[in-house]
Image (cartoon, rainbow, N blue to C red):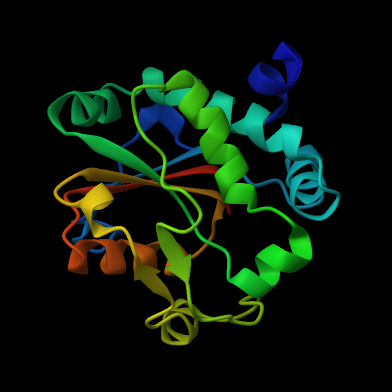
Length: 203
């Protein structure tokens, strides 16, 4: 991606590097939620994410993941967390039926790019944490309805990988947070340490 795209085309997802803490918008189990850019419905960023998910341009995912990783390097609060804790990157899992249809997990492609910047942090593999509930599209649902649909949607199969570690959940878009909130709860129940959420876009 060109420097024009990275610097000038998209609106900052977290103006002034604002940290969103658990006492304002987030459940207690999540200590930071940070997005690279604001989602631009009908704009270039939405087109990029569509190309990644539905046109199989997986290189876009790695590019966006690297951009997210570089942004995090400039976020002192997150860097401090990485310095204090052993960490693991957790791309939001896809249900196996969606994975089989699409052929890849877009969050995993983002995580691969992120890992090229933060190469000392391991990334969960596809079978370490799985999605066991194949929910239909959540578009148009309230947060409460989304959370209800996603109850018990995930399972941790490799508990040793996340035990007492800072878990860095990575996904493409943060909308209501229902998916990442449910995943964070599953991670905490399985013994994870602090949880943060990093996304390319915030709607």
